[in-house]
Length: 445
Figure (tube, rainbow, N blue to C red):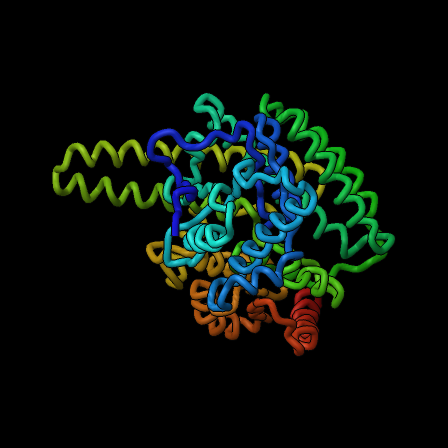
């Protein structure tokens, strides 16, 4: 089948511009997807966030069930969008007016195959060959090639990353306030309204990088959220979530795991959205350094200079991300005590110190395992590992940390997810939270 409309970056020759196209963004993280779309719109692109999980029947129909669960979800999202758009526009619907945004990652994770498989499925429908897929890759820290004007790419990347930091802050604010809210539901309503306000701010100020204006709005949101806390509600067990980024972020796919944990008495902290994009830059820097040392050893001058350029590119990218993230957290933590995010280099140091795993093996296990160690050191009362059913990196995480946590008497729960409703799930979570409360009682006694 034709796959000429699958475009990876960096592109060969001139890639597609977004001019006169509508960019379709899947909703992995509810807040983050809309802030990213607003950032694209700030730079002149017509960006829309697709409805999610409404097309699961379509996603199942056009997958075999052996694919990674998020592949089914996103497959359903794009097919559902197309069906709805056809009904809305009728004969004026033109697949060539749309560009589907589906990033990828190099192996061993199956995420790198989503866009390729979805291209095959789309090409099997008459006319949908014209709908393009753009797939930025982790191999170059998700560079956008010439999807935007060259003069705008760096400004866009900075603004898009800032939107991810703000997403993490808003979600940590939600998890900090909701378990202690004065009136049930008030925090959800407030955060939803605040996300809309920040979406408008990114669309208005993003292109000009007026981050101070956005930070002012974020500060107002944090101050108002603090007033929603009922001080008479006692502290609750603190639960940390790690795992595959899509599943732990996508509320529908994980069946509202955080809300279920909160219902049974938890205060939850999920691993951040920025963790993965920071890791991509950090891993690229590690690989570039290894290339440089190998080329230096073999006295290959040309490849050695290429490695130096990669070191500089990945190094500057990582430094900027860490600077921007630290600055935002510092300002917000003056107003409310939300958990800071960790540096990826610190996670690698933790793995080396405890000899649990190696960054040389790559994948999200590099992040989940040391994050769990940090949860233990940080006084958390339980850990949840969320992942697609059969996900290799997350099963490796589980195999390594279970004995470690058992010796420390730290409650631990694996939550593999697929499209089915697991009959014993609620009882399992309730049992886990009972153990977390016992651990919490020992901490405060």
